[in-house]
Length: 475
Image 1: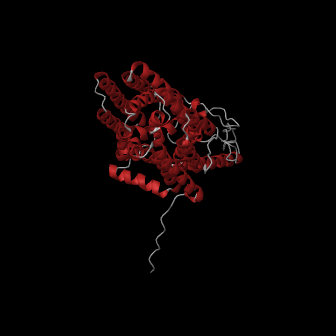
Image 2 (image 1 turned 90 degrees about the vertical axis):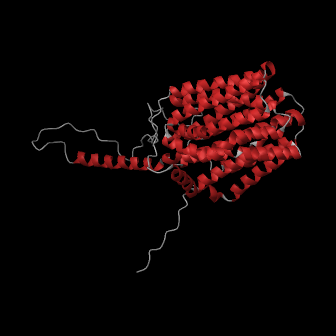
Image 3 (image 1 turned 90 degrees about the horizontal axis):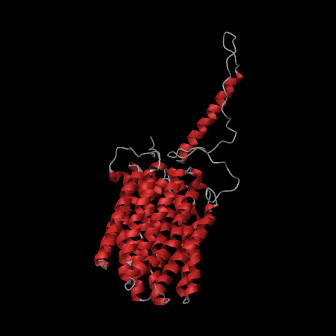
């Protein structure tokens, strides 16, 4: 993607110089008659509007501001549609998460197994979803996967209504949901840069995280209220209806076709190409590794929140909703701060936020006061989303368009696919020892991971790792 910008800009410079040379030759024809002067193109040294990405076709450009706007991505219609539809889906998703978590709160192992069944298919089939995202129209892929996930939500509602929402039934339905997630996540992550110009990618990623966490503030509390008043069936049904909103929003979008990988090769070869691309780019590989650390060591604190709320802090479902809402408030504050950073982000943002995330989770694990615990979850949520947003933006800005789907499928594998590993591991540790001890181990992993990146800053340098050249045989 960056390379295409460079070629286009160079071409404009050559045209500008050529037009000036023609104007210097004179403005008369061979017969002496005057001819209309052609308007010369803007010279290369005059600042021009940055060219859009290869797949984004802009309308009228917004007026450039001296200071980065926190809501810059919302100037673009298709991004607004995607954001609004996804916000409604996230609200329904959090309501379902509350219902499932509270149904299985008495068994941390079963609760971890549900998350494992839902996200394990992403780890196995995620790269295949990336190939599909590079080969097919991403908007249509999303419409199909959203319809499938909607069907699983209504299945849970039916099982709950009939009194058959057993732990193993929930695990089976969650596994089917994970199959759709494996194709949904790469397509969604790759679609965002198609909706905004390159200079707004960081802001678009931050706004995406903002929408997810605004729903995280309201969704758990609303889900707890619906669960307490009407039971889990209503929570599952509302989640199913929410997917219709995103499907309608996707159908109204006018997204141009992205750069299709039309190379006549097999699926396996394309998978290998994506892995080789990541291996050659050190910064991309490091950021994906950091996301894996967050998923394995950091996200289990969300899985263990209902256990902490009920067994350690001795609160009912309303207290669990408050704890979830506290992490959402912190995440919103963190994302709003990052949204104003413009197109550049600090290189050491990810390692420092990893360390901050670990320290916050460690403090939460040691607390036995409900409100003190909720206060520690505010910075935990902020550091958590800041680290993910920084890693996502760094990968999106570094990757070439024709590899975006495959690279973002590896991001989905690191983010979603590794959740089962952490969920089952720390669910087993919490069952064998205690939830605070499991959270302490997870926080230690986050602190160690961030410290390694701070000790070796070259891992975050934006340069490709090339193979050494072979010497020509001597004659």
